[in-house]
Length: 401
Image (tube, rainbow, N blue to C red; front, side, top):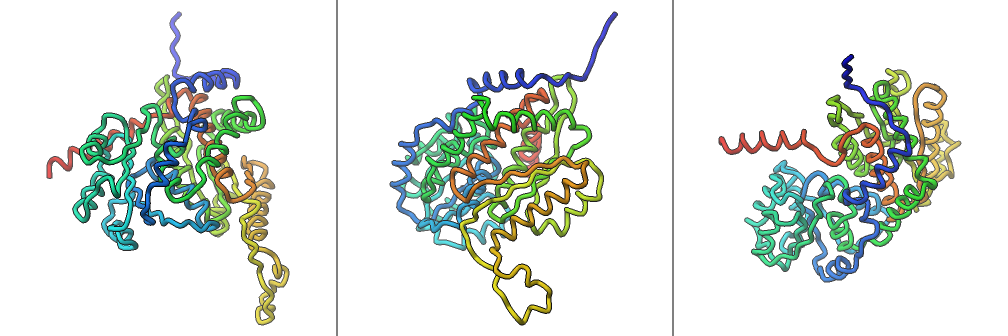
């Protein structure tokens, strides 16, 4: 009797855990929480320009954006940070027009060293000013064209290890260098990562949360194909974009048995999206999971004042309440409304406050979640062959022009 199959069995949690433990020897992001930052800190303190432009795209900028956006409204950074991560000429020129590029420092990031979008932007900038050791830092892979460019122009270079993928690179020099330059406490970022790493691999608090949710998502992947995050605060807006890339590019793969896998990420921002997407969640097709994020203390005590002229609006019950409390009540109410449906899987994550430790812990938690889901799906979550096809076609088209 001959027997062939193209399905796979969901492995035990312990098997997945042992696989992730072994991955620490070959997958670079696991060790980033324990790196020595002294060299980066010394270099960052030497940058005198107050305007910093980060040139890159995708994983080279999304994580850094997420952390900067999360922190900037509650901090008074002495340096301004801009991202040149678009080849839309209207947006590109608008961003450049916001500052004097002659008094700026440029952090150029590309692991491959020849990603077409940042290379195009570099060419554009270098046609306006001279890029050299006085105003430029390069972060790239070893022995790449970009490293050769940096050496030729005597530009300081930080290397991205080969075993660290772009979407897992925010706690490598990719994110640490520009964030340290503008004054973010990168040591606290690593402390946040370390707290989750140690908890997970010591099978403490985060182990159960991560491994069991990953298992649920994979066991129910045919039914709940859409994974929604519903973030309650504008400081999460760029975190949402980072999450979409991490989830989609890592988990949309063909597994070892040749079957197509994927869980579609959808990122919402509350309370605005309560007035659009929530209707689809509550009464639409039951093919979604929902994860809420909220922040206990936004470090802002702004209160909704009383206004007798507006009493006619029947809104006195919000007088004297903090906006911080209002947005969290909205998150809780939406969560409870979905819970009451009884057939929409949902959970809620509340982080303490707006600081480096909490955003890093949240991001590292999701990186471990993706690794866990990938292991259950029996795919490689660290490559992106589908993306590479598009890059090849683009190059062929440009060569024909």
